[in-house]
Amino acid sequence: MKLRIEMLASLPLALLLTGCPLTDHYQLLSQDAAGAGSQSSAGAPGGSSSTIAGSDGFSGAVADNGGSIGETAGHANGGTSGGTSCSNACNAKRVCGVDGCTSGWVTMAPPPSGLVARSKAVAVAMGKAVFIWGGLDNVGAALDTGAIYDATTDTWTFLPKDPGSPSARIMATAVWTGNASNQVIVYGGTDASGNMVYRDGAVYDVADNAWAPLPPNPMGSKRSAPFGYWDGTRAVFYGGMASAINAAPGADRFDLKSWSASTSSGDPGLLGSSATAFDGSVMYLQGGVIGSTRQDKVFAYTSSTDSWASLSKSLSARTGSFGAWDGTRFVVWGGQDDAGLCNDGKALLGMTWVEMSAAGAPDARRIAFRRSGWSFQVKPGVIAVLGGLTSLTGTGLLSTGGATYDVVNARWTRIPDWTSRQSHEYGIGVWTGEEFVLWGGRHQNVSTLVGERWAP
Image (cartoon, one colour):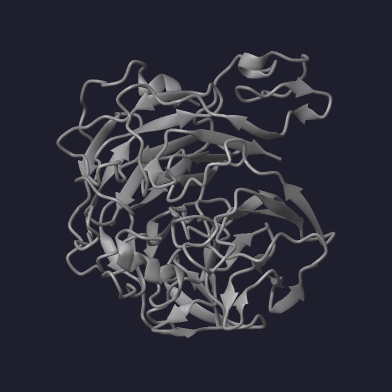
């Protein structure tokens, strides 16, 4: 599957990588007239813990943060910002002090000339680096270009464009396979209009800096914006949209050689807009919508055994909730029930749900399907909630801030608004294990090249 080509960027990628509307009908998804599988996700796709994404709902995929991808020497003094000498290797624009690297928001360097502003792109963390590809430009054309952003140096490197590259598309999902095979699998999505939904994609090999087409998946489902993750052996793409109004069933699984479909025995059906999280081996789902009916059920899917299980339920029937794995618990917060937006939540440990504290909680909000809203594990026992839709009237208000929640101590801590205050509507939001990288999307209906990073 490896195709060797010349590097099209100014720096060799091997050096860098060492060690909701699609069209208006997709707005229905945010208001639950129809469902989609993810969140991140992306992963967004918003993401779930360690993702992407997102309750990607967002381009979400698991970020194996134990590797050396994106790591660059020479940042012990805070990267380009300088700082007090210490043992911590800080990313660019962060200073190293007695308490570690400086926290909060910092701006991202703009991408090089030639990488156009875009929305609805696919993104996934590769260690400390972020892979960004495809999307929609300002004149409404789907893109087949992208780049890798390295937070350690605040630099960009173009992705190649070769005969194995995926066709131009939006709302795809990407999964990184981890350090061992070091590949990014891009799957699904739609054309610029949202009318053509794909069930194909391509594999980007980091070491070779080359693309190769995925083998055909003729029995698989067409999927726009599914929730995606790497389970250690295979890429799993769950849910998403099979058409403009219909959710896709089950999951398609790719083991780097061939495709298989998840079992339908015990699965939740055509479920969309659920809270989603992945713990490294099991995917968790809470709530969501089937047809036009909100759900309160809870499911767990283990891809290694291809089996579904129903778990105890407790929260009200709701859609668009933020979901994350905190290291021991499936945490679900916010969303929208039949009474409106929610700012409550619970954490599931085993079969027992524990209510989250309401003191200091963010404003009620929900994930807006791939438009805004991300959740992820910051460290064991602590999750973060960022962005989301805070109003159901008119076009809705997209938040530019959020909070962390300490599950053990039942304590919320505010995350200030990001620096630009731009909405980053349909932008990429990816947690790398150290920083949350937020870039692109639309602001006031115009695509932006602005980006910013948050560290706890």
